Image (cartoon, rainbow, N blue to C red):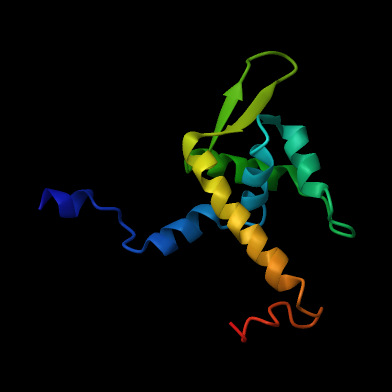
Length: 128
């Protein structure tokens, strides 16, 4: 009985994973942090790279995404306690183990989305 009570509330690992990384920017934040610790402004700048015509990320949205990633254990927040504020974000061990998953998604996208036309983003998948 003790095992049943200690089991996660979500029985499906795919659903749990989806909930953990849901959000427009979380995957990209983790991907950018693979290179090492980053400050808030550096993360924000990284999210704006390569997005012609897109609006800037609102500070509130970025803060919310960073907080959620911290709570999920994928990233760690280090506050240096100085003025002006200096805060760095870095991947945890759990976050580092997630980088190959994102790399696989990126590789899949490179292979399959390049084949697609602008109106059919997943064209070419039916052949698989």
